[in-house]
Length: 50
Image (cartoon, rainbow, N blue to C red; front, side):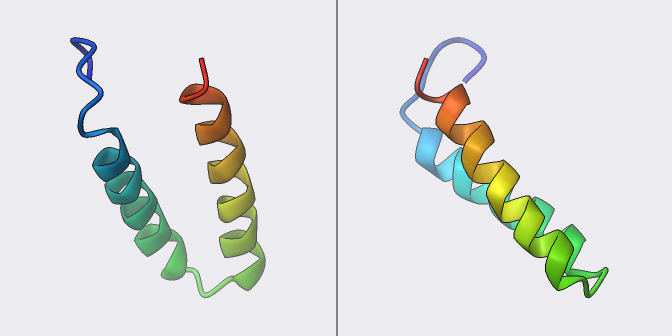
């Protein structure tokens, strides 16, 4: 992706989501999981729209 190849964009997004979610799940905080989902969605909406 650094070279501009975006063919694996959706796969990267899924792996990124799963990695961070697994780290946050260890906290057992439903509020933190919800916050992560909100921020993740907004971040990717901005990052991949431009």
